[in-house]
Length: 193
Image 1 (tube, rainbow, N blue to C red):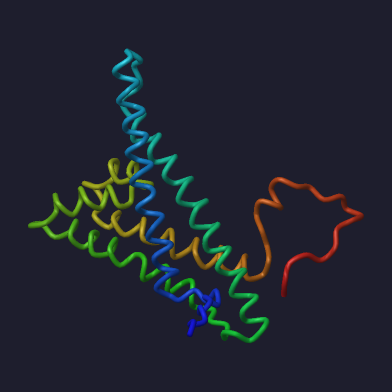
Image 2 (cartoon, rainbow, N blue to C red):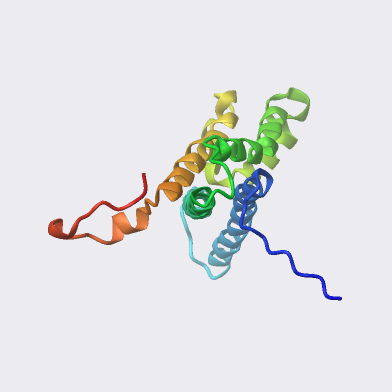
């Protein structure tokens, strides 16, 4: 009569993992808009700021948000995968975070190629600089001198995601290392092998 509800086992597919990383780019765009309106309102009330303040402020805010958000999401997925591997619900795949990071950067790779093609250069550069706003200051300084600069922001997730995932898988949480200091006599082996 009633159908039993199927529970999600907590398995994070590669597509879901890549979407979470891609979602960080979307959230960076929203942060960029908020900072833009804040800086614009400073002009309205008569406060003057240096010319490069907007690009530097947005670059720093978006980069910090991106690093923290992606680290936390990947750490949680790694921690959950450890539990699923421990109880033999899934098999361990050490390349899962690298593949997810690569899949999440496909739109950025397409935009980087569009930014390098002469006929689509302006469109590609404008969309790319919005998509990778955490690198806006770097892109503004170097875009005319070094064309390969568009591929550098693609590397950040390829480094961050596997590191954060494997830290979560091993139970190493950076916030505990930074915030809390353990006395030497109470130190014991923490984390997972």
